[in-house]
Image (cartoon, rainbow, N blue to C red):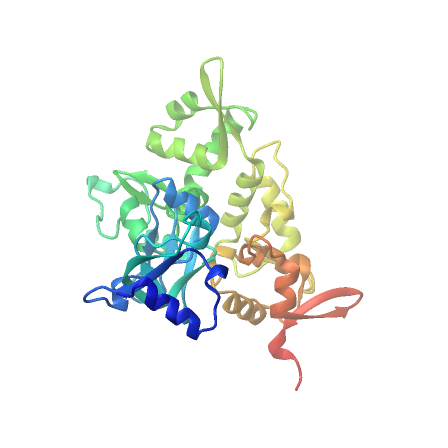
Length: 389
């Protein structure tokens, strides 16, 4: 270990003035068996630092064939190794200049031992959670209603812990998406309903509303369960009401206000489910006739689930759900332009909105991945791949 005299001699050779430096001189030495593989550095922003300081944990998720991500309780971050030209040393008890008081009258040497070193660190970048896999897993065994004879296939069923281990997203993001896709817990496992079964449940509810001449804003839970119990399990009826309505209490009774847009969208999906293309005018007529009295159907209710073609004669509509499109941004644009060569901004926006970051707009995304031109006075976008060279 160096003495103060040796340090002063080194400063003289380096032509540095001792009075210009801190009074405390750190003398570093390597501990025994120090290896760069012993430690890994990770760069955290203020939010994650506060998260750790509060005693919360961070989790790295990803299957062997996936790129690892880091998750807090409610956010997902991409992990990327960043190399540095300077060797980073891990020194226990080493104080930075701003932590030194410089109160000593004369210089002195403080010895510190290097416990590890690294020439890289993990860089974090907030990203969209990868949730497409969630529905894919749940669709391996969708719930189709009570099994005949009480026997049901038990393979490919997932608890919340199973999903946390498989899905590259935070727990809060997973729970939010489970609600979005109308999943529910059955016998401790998260299940997504088979489409036909979910529409069957919705049909029972809307038919009851019509037959009882109820307002769709005031559907009584107790009466609904009594009337529909012979047809379906009570918990499934209540799940349907939770999925398509808002729960509230009045005079100690529980009611639901059916969400007009959700019910209309669900009914439209049922009509479009087995049709390649539907005559738009005929579809709108049948659609309006199929929803409960008092509800109004509008095409803007179908943004991100159905696509209208105004250029065909007659005009048509077809099923195109954003959840069925690729998660990767470039792959998403490639797929969209394989379906349609030119898109208006209004048509394509619902299918790329989920790709935008917190500070990114759909306009910026279109500028990066598509090129614009004017057609009949309307701005349209097509693939950059189509630019002539």
